[in-house]
View 1 (cartoon, helix red, strand yellow):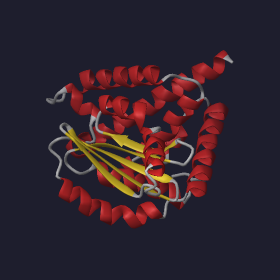
View 2 (view 1 turned 30 degrees about the vertical axis):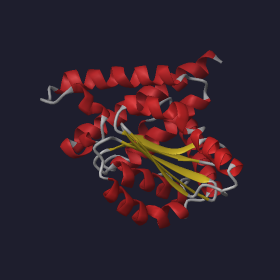
View 3 (view 1 turned 120 degrees about the vertical axis):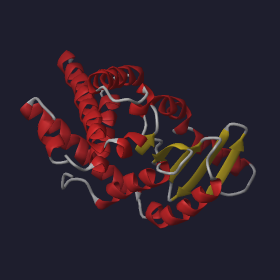
View 4 (view 1 turned 90 degrees about the vertical axis):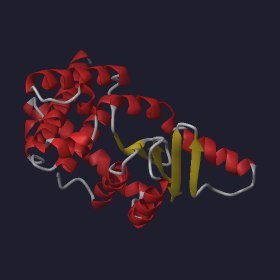
Length: 243
């Protein structure tokens, strides 16, 4: 990883990675006090679409409701529904939202949440925000000077977590450049289908949208991640060219 990324940013991705590896968890969001995404990880693009629409506003709605009830700030909350559950916790204004499917083991999730609580509590807003801003600017500088993100990718080869962090960085860069989520999702889907068609693997296409691919074929998972990063950066480059 780039030296511009602080330890706090690495911890943020460790938090979402830890909880999304549990069976039945469909995704996780780490949100800063301004409602911006610090880190996210979802098993599929469909799960991401459903969650992202409400994920960045839900913590503040919960906080308002708790204040109206004079219950004080929300620290830890589990909402169970007929189709799953949502686990929400907050520390120093940073929110962790864990989206849970109907077949998840909530007991195992509780154990994992206790394990990551200390890690989560050590993720401070200012450190994370400075790290993200520095990393995004570093990526933009490299792309502008070389016309490619290849050298940034090269430093992360063989490290899926680092590649996922880079993916999150370029995703945020694209959003901030004014590129719509639908455009990004369509680009990712096209890339996934192309690699799926060329790879000739004997698995369903939806497998490419899940973290399970990390275990099934790490090399293929890294290729998918790399091509998505390049595709998103291509969108950013085209957008900046219009300006």
